[in-house]
Length: 248
Image 1: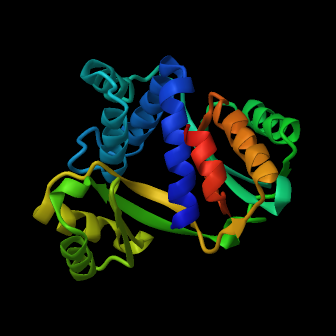
Image 2: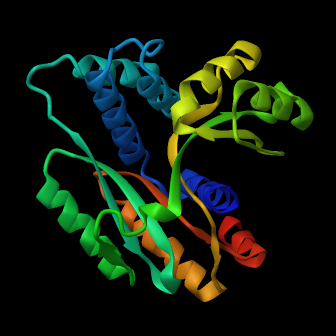
């Protein structure tokens, strides 16, 4: 889990300073609308919608915006978005999975391909790198809810596969098939998680030198800047020195 967590922490902290908030809210609202349209508008009965709302709350998205995005799903004249996945390679042979939501496949494919090319990467066929990742569930809690041993014990009892605990909190990982059951079991004991959802977790991470690492971070930033892109997953790990530099 190290590569994914390390990367997301960097991007999250950079995002606090660099991201245009309206764009962040726009992407969150789109996921809420899509989740509500594909399932039920009741988050208690719709795990994907619940995860989207938690993500929105984590970014301090106003309650009115969240409710408006849910109501939009019921509108007959709203845009019809579909989930689409892109895969590619970055400098140093790093693998990337890009999840997008689009109402125009041609536009999104062109934008994502351009983002890869501009930053020294290359878009590949679907399935080219997915075999290097596992589709897993993640349930995160703040460190204050329990100590590491208690969380580990609870996660094992719930059927989870792995737990990472630290100052930033606890991150429980489970198989996609058991995601719902594990989430319910942990919520029964610790309450609502701070974050939850399905992600692509790299089976192994590759170490890259600092020059390549900076190129890869720029590549991810360019891809994430595309309006239709929701998430980017990677399989590279950065040196401690570069992490400190990027977080400074």
